[in-house]
Length: 200
Image 1 (cartoon, rainbow, N blue to C red):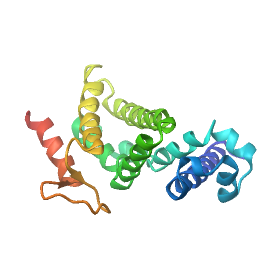
Image 2 (image 1 turned 45 degrees about the horizontal axis):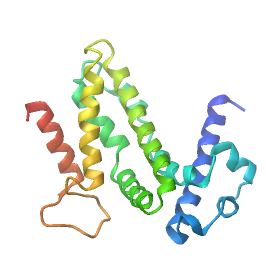
Image 3 (image 1 turned 30 degrees about the vertical axis):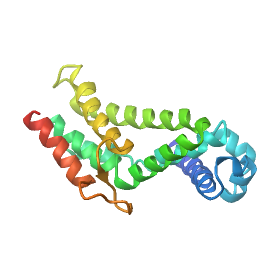
């Protein structure tokens, strides 16, 4: 089997297992099911589960990373001289979609309820951040000082995390508890990047 096809198949299997574990957590709570329930629902063996995840907590948390689209294609299609800020906005719109953020919010709520889940959720957040930052660095090339990419991405990622954690009142599609002061996610991204372009 071709290596690329094998990798895609492995990712799809991992995502199927992660979705099953996430759905079972929604339905029964983290302690209401075991690994055997996950593999039964997903249609795989325990050995396959063990090849992907060390425990059910890792599987549950991995559902968010599986929702992150591969944005390398969009970045390679961008003009070479595109300002890095605009490239980062493209990454944020493609990688950190509302669906992904809704899942992350739900995972963060689960992690508060089940502390054994928290390190795995934090690990997934870190993987998402590093993936996006590496892609952005490849677009930046030698055009910017080496410190610029992590500082820029850190500022934007920090704002997104504040929105996820509720420090900023950002409403995501599908959420019913909308306050009068809440802004939608698209407006939040526009405002964040306007501040970065024009200064605070």
